[in-house]
Image 1 (cartoon, helix red, strand yellow):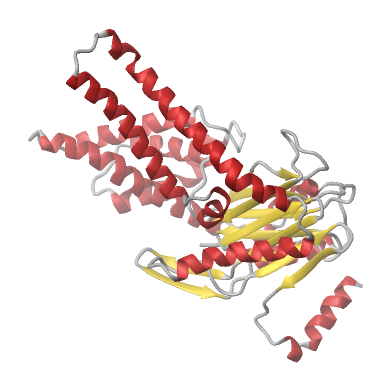
Image 2 (cartoon, one colour; image 1 turned 180 degrees about the vertical axis):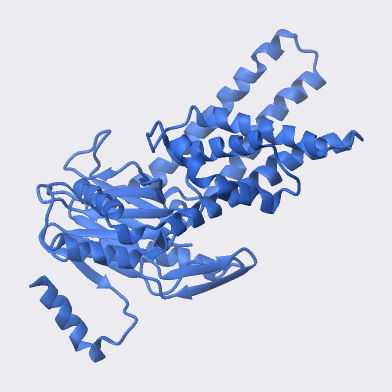
Length: 429
């Protein structure tokens, strides 16, 4: 996992990222504190990029991709920051070195093996257990019918989902290309032969899943922040990216942060956004740990509903009360939510944002580093895996000075590598 943050105001933007990378799967994991997650996207212009989640794209390390793009970009500049992101994704899909058939098949296998296990463990097995509790035997055909019902329900939900890959022929092409892969996945998990119609239903479900806004646990988050040539205030764009399927790059842009001299529904004068492990930043901003707040709200919700049931049980209440009971409970829960939001805004988040609005760039960097370090410290003193840690890379991006490193690690001794820095400068010339 990762802890990263972007903090922006009218003076500039500070980006900070930890160095921990987790290798391996469930039951066998190792954490190294040497990963690079924060980079300059351009050697010449004020644009930075951070990565979180997946460490590679179609088998190619993101660090290699970013630095290859940077060499191609050279001194090219764009009017807006968003256009840097668009050009970067065009580069990903156009460079044939980042794609081959084997990596697509591997990606399909990984995504849909995990998805199949989730379907079987969380839904199919639950329905099978309900049948066996009644004493009735469950045949292979019964299991197949349950699988079909589960898939049809999921497909119906996906039909109302947002389409990211808009290609009318995608389902047909996906079935033609990946039928054997999906069949192999099913045979590796299900111990009886499925009808071809069921396999085709899986193919239909998987193709719709890829086209939708669903992203697997292996997706990568990209954060691009800084300035376009015509912009005098910074902005931040976040993207989620999965991979290339049938020649289509699957990615989705999240809500951007746009800084301006005033605040409205589109712009802010200051903003903060954490990425990956966010709980400590939310605790800092809202005065309470998110999971604790969720638990408290569930308890309040349960208590309010129980109170109405107790009134009905203990007192002789008109039957008409039952008709309005649910509405009253919902209004009370909503009132508690609204009052809690007001308290958090007034005493926690608003005072912080008021200060953040006027912080000089040096303090932006210090704040970004402190919040990432806080997440790292929390993981270190708990029994959880230390998936956040290591040196924290910090940079500040301003319109006048460009990207300036405040803290940056190297895997080598800079005093012994004069040629590295000489070549870097020569590349700029």
